[in-house]
Each structure stands twice: as structure tokens, then as C-alpha cells.
Amino acid sequence: MEATDILLKQWQNSGLTQSEVSEKFSNCDLYVTCEPCIMCAAALSFLGIRAVYYGCANDKFGGCGSILSLHESNSKQASSAVGQGKNFKCTGGIMASEAISLLRSFYEQGNPNAPKPHRQVRMFR
Image 1 (cartoon, helix red, strand yellow):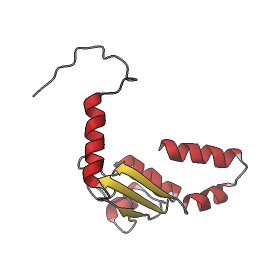
Image 2 (cartoon, helix red, strand yellow; image 1 turned 60 degrees about the vertical axis):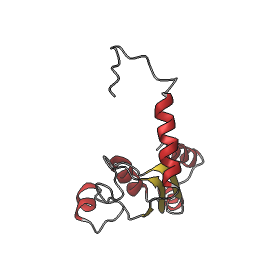
Image 3 (cartoon, helix red, strand yellow; image 1 turned 90 degrees about the vertical axis):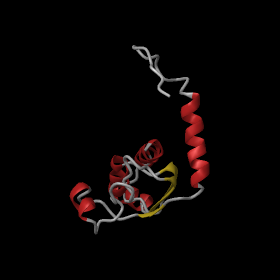
Image 4 (cartoon, one colour; image 1 turned 180 degrees about the horizontal axis):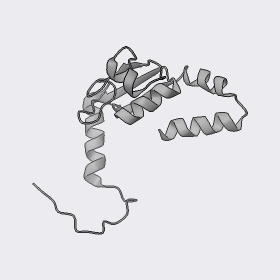
């Protein structure tokens, strides 16, 4: 969503109309490590993105087939959740093991920029 926000701001600042911005998004493909969550999949549908390619499935919150299929407007879930959104192609499993490894490594290292917790963190094994 950070990337789409940057593109949207750049295109608006360059004086593009709403229909010109929509046309640009309809020519964009998004490559991500993990399947977009339900909220992100709905936002991508509203933006009118052309296609999403992802590595690993999001078994808890996936919006492109794992939980809901918001990329397909012919599904009952999509029409009630997304409303006026557009279909987009969604392809998963691209370098899935590498994506899982990358995410696992990130979470094991922790985020050095994260604020310090106010309460003691308990580790479960």
C-alpha cells in the first residue's frame, strides 16, 4: 500500500485527472511477498490494479483466495465487500519457499525501528 500511495501522490501532483490515474493503475502489476490481506485486496480492487503476483498464501487474512476472493467480482463475497471494485488477476505461489524464508528471517530478527514494548514480552516455546 505504501507503493500505491506514492504512485497516487506523484500522479496527482503531476496534474493527472482521476480517470488518467485510474488508467495508469489499470496498467500496473504488483509483485509482493505475501498474499494481500482482505483490506489490501479490496483497496487494490478499488484502485483497479491489473494483476497481483505473490509468493506465499496468507492463511489467516488472505483476500485473494485463501480466505476471501476479493479479486473476483463474480464471487458473492467480493460484490458485498468491494462494491464498485474491479476484477484483477491474482497469481500465487511464485517462489513461495523463498518468500516464507524471507518473512521468517524478518520476524526472527525483529524490527529495530519498532517502539519498545511497555510491558514485558513473554516468549512461548
